[in-house]
Image (cartoon, rainbow, N blue to C red; front, side, top):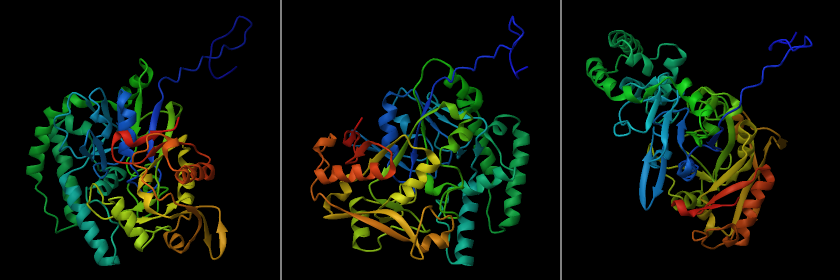
Length: 437
């Protein structure tokens, strides 16, 4: 007898037909250390989307999108919300600071299982960074938005979720005060205005209630209802993933493809295209190993030409050559179906361009990306040197309009990774994304 099904006339079991898979989601993920230009790719794809989702992170993400010369910066909301026809969904894997959600009531849905970021989480984040600096002489370089402390509280099972806020406010207040007290005991210098924040939270209840849904049910209906274009906007990036990133200099959530299923409450068979966003060179904010970093005039030129300053923190980004070892590693985890290569125009002024293709450790080639920070600090990058194109690519609107050496640079990346490049970015505006297929 099989596990499922009724008897057939001849006594054999009838297998129950598998349910239809339903709509597929398209996922956009950062393939480096963030700041690759994911917002721009999402903005492009959101133009004919019905729904755009965030599945992890919080308002530590910073996505800049330029539409008709107007620049928009997004931190918590998915940047695809610029399209007035799109419904934005903030999944359970996201941690939410409730300020700043005003004005989006008609097009924003929030999972009731998402954890709430309180003001004291942000204060704790600052205190922890200060302590790390004093004790170890270096901090993690967090955005001080309270993200780490909230995910810690979630793992310790002392966090509070949106559903708790909307249930019994008296019980919620008690749990809030207990959590605040815990932090006060750990960090005696912490100043927490409990009553002030509870008043604010009470006022949010009526305001956010119309936006809150059971996220699992909402997502299921979206996947199995009428055909829909659903987009998932990853925040941060592969090398900042809590499991796969350059730990401990990482964020506190899974920004790789697995975070999409756990952060939205959906099965893997509903994941369709997975687009990796890759900058034509490499940047990193804050400290941590960075094998292809150029602490010289090359790095400075990339920094100034690329205007490499963090959207969330205003910090200058460290810059270096494109490192394909790192992208290959991100691809092993995410299984990219295609890539968006951004900011190619920043390389316009170089007469030769280096690309990292392998790592050596103690003079031996290594086939993997090292997990340990100290080991990663010691790797020696093996570069291929490609000829530059020394000409302005910003007006190119098709692959054929790019200089021959720029085309060769793109093809080199595709061949090395075995993943096709679907878009090439040569400027800030929507129009400067060249689509190849």
